[in-house]
Image (cartoon, rainbow, N blue to C red; front, side, top):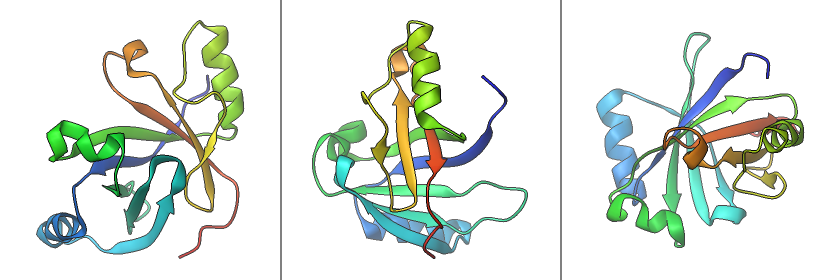
Length: 137
């Protein structure tokens, strides 16, 4: 696998008020918002510059993410930008590793994603992100 750039760090928080509090604390600004149907969650990406990667705040509407860290939230994953998520899945499977999804799923309107099962990566959840359309900001 070729070297990858960090796309974002994903943080689960229980509600928008919690996200706003963290963003205010750190002086972060909203870049764009979205919804991921596959994971039933609202997303808020922070604005970023040339030397930093954004934070993706994940606000579950229910499902497994709502129970993340006993409902308190926390750092969920580190995401890497890749040219082809399916090629990454195929490479991982060829190495005997499993992904969370059988095939990449739609993230926000502009990306598709898949995750390496954390049992293969010392308990850390890594996401692979492929941009498939212009980002709607």
